Image (cartoon, rainbow, N blue to C red; front, side, top):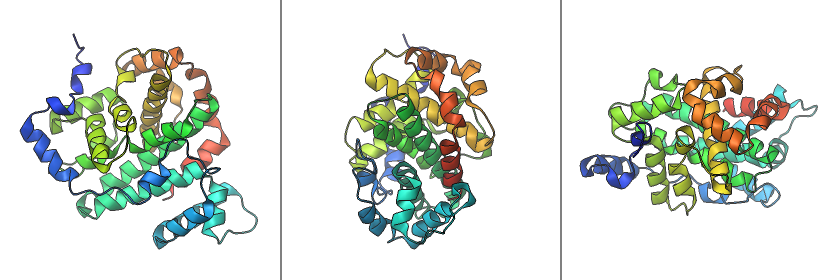
Length: 303
């Protein structure tokens, strides 16, 4: 028998037909962001990607190219001589930061082009996705996860469903954005929109043609919040990404927060147990306090 928390996340096929059709209408309006498939491929890193080729593609969007140059030349990166080449900026910033920023930025454009009234919400989701993706990648590297790139992709796509909520007749408002309890967020979503972000995200990216196991893993990103997960590779990644998304949400509300108080809170009890089981907890504080992570989070927040 499922617990009350588990029942909050209703699989897509169990949602009533009328509700599914109402969300399918929104899903059909949104095309996948350019470069999504290329930048989100498994195991992809700067070493496997041609920065010249990426610079040519990014440079087709003058706003995105300009924003990346602005970040690379910001005081956070301490350059003596300014960078004027997008290709050099990509190498300097690092592939994961560029990937996170580029995809979340293009996703924002895909959604706001359809419904400009949701711009504030979409901008929030963009920053949330980028921050979670950056944290997931660096945390995964620190704990020697087999595939940090896929962890980054999961975090990057985790909030696609939240973006879709912004297209509804009653889009998420300030109360939603200020939540730090992810279980309370799931409850609000289920009560107000009759669907939850993990399920909505998975269904949308399936329709975009993102291959398995990404959609299945995205749909499971709530599980570490409510139940123990076996010590296996996919579950370890799920725990790390779920925690990264939760920490990134709190970071958006207060850039000076530390992960400890959130992880120690009562709503995160099951998540903390999973972090311990999967040997992830002891590295988050080092990763969070690293200059590299804080610099990249600040860079993503500029866009």
